Length: 130
Image (tube, rainbow, N blue to C red; front, side):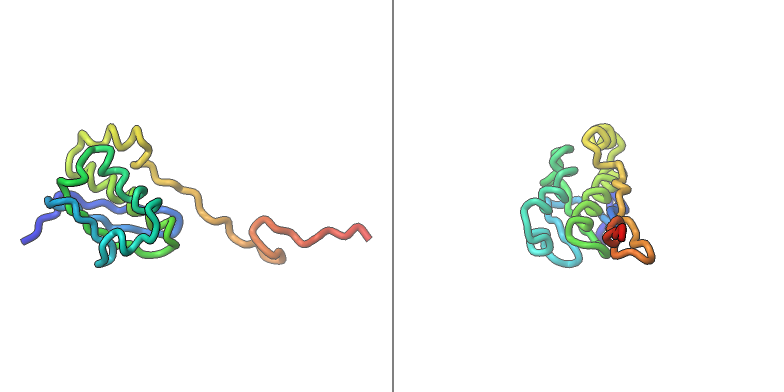
C-alpha cells in the first residue's frame, strides 16, 4: 500500500491542485503525465519545483498532482502552493523557509468581472462630447 506523507490543496486564479507527497526518488506526476510533458515550458516547471528546491528535497519525494481549472500559468501556481502546503504537512520545520520565500501565501489576484453595458472589465465605450 502506498502511504501519503503529506497532502496539500493549492489555489491560484481559478485553478485548484490537490498534491500528494510520498517517499520516493523525485518523480513528479501531473494529471497522470510526467511534469515535463504536462507543462510545456521550463518557466512553469521551475515554478512547480521551487518549494522542493528550497527545502532541498527534490530527490527525496515522489509527488502526485491532480490539477484542474484555469490556464497553464494558474495551474503552475496552484501546484506550487499545494506542494508547499503538503511539504509543511510532512515536516513542520519546512514551514519557516517556505513562508519566507512566499510559497505558503495564497495569491488572491483574480480576473475582474466584466460590467454590463461595457465592452470589458475596465474598458469603456469611446466618449463623444457632441
